[in-house]
Image (cartoon, rainbow, N blue to C red; front, side, top):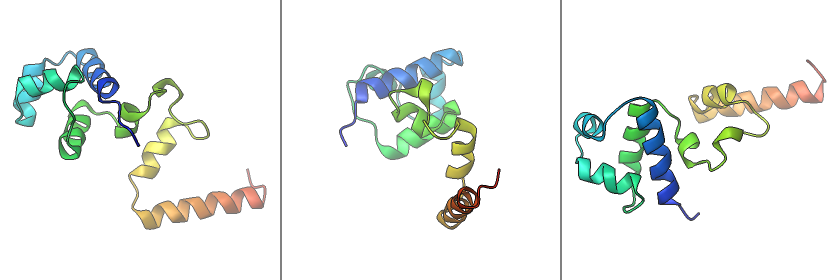
Amino acid sequence: MNMDFSNIGKRIQTTRMENKISQKEMADFLGISMNYISRLENGKTKIELKTFIKICDFLNISIYDVLNEKSDNIIRYMDKELYELIVKCNLEKQKFICNMVKLLIKNQVV
């Protein structure tokens, strides 16, 4: 999968600015340089997974929202809230939820 680091940086920047957080505040909190954040937001550097997760946690956004180019249409068949609940579950619980949904559909339970 090709990553569009420019769009990822723009989404991070937009979220940061919507939350009225300066690059310096974010850099200080995360222990990274302000220059790195600037290069990241301008698409001039690739982001490491560990740093990406820290930034998403700090900004209180899901990784999916940042990676998804169609963030207005978060998930076609599932609303955002349900998706975020499911991704917080471990694999065993996710399989259980999937099987329950299949069972509900099979039995036409509403």
